[in-house]
Image 1 (tube, rainbow, N blue to C red):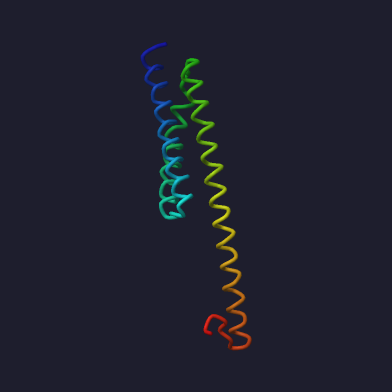
Image 2: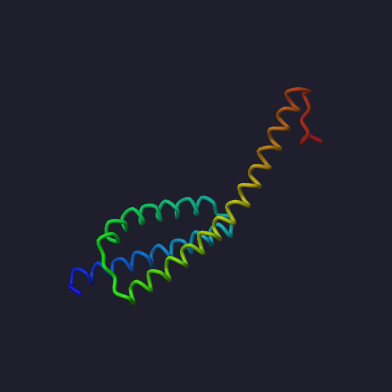
Length: 118
């Protein structure tokens, strides 16, 4: 393996390590309901993936690096699945809240009733 390929291989793994660390932070933010933090971290992940693509595409990995990359990808996907579980639950709650608010607005418009003012 030439020096350039070695550096490229090292950079690829370093990028996947960083991406994995970011998805762990995203999972933790989702678990704690820190939605603003989750959004900020998601933007960092998007930027990193954009920067990773050309390096990843031109890199040749040896077997050890390929195995490490596979491990990291599996970890990233598992974390993303957990993030999705938390965000879907939150989105369901948000949809219910919005539906309830719409119903209250319709009642108020139609009958001049404010159900929350008891």
